[in-house]
Length: 181
Image (cartoon, rainbow, N blue to C red; front, side, top):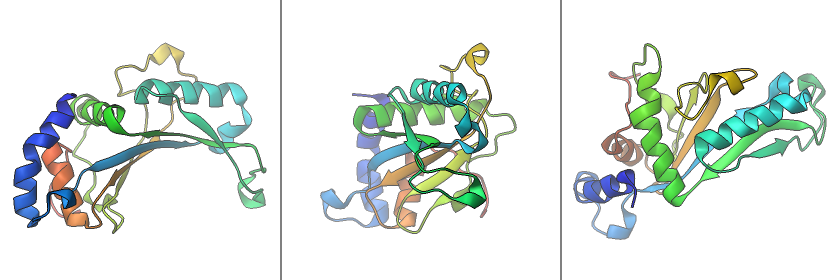
């Protein structure tokens, strides 16, 4: 059992009490984590897309997939079937291992890090935030990177309430920014 899964099992009683949950099955928990990268102009360069996919696969510990455009959109210069991004969905043990690495290793390595924004909740208990580069993760070797890129991380929880999701993530160690932002 991973360290983060054990931490979750330790915080369940306190979380249930704070949220006023009587049924143990209603206790909020992490469902999945989705890491995604938009390709943008880099979508035309197959070598760069492949390098981005390998980097995200290294970070996630699981193979990432290249997502192709479903429709052609002239305004974005996107053609149907051309690469538009990279995505990987983590569940179970991989999800807890990635979350542990994110909060204990990667985020503290960000220069001038003041916490993740509190505004990232979507009203349905899910949390989204972005990172501007991938170099903060220990697996990434700078010499193997063709171009630095950011990524969006979506943490999906089983609760529909943002306050319960916030309490869950805070108790698991997510470093939120201080104040009301």
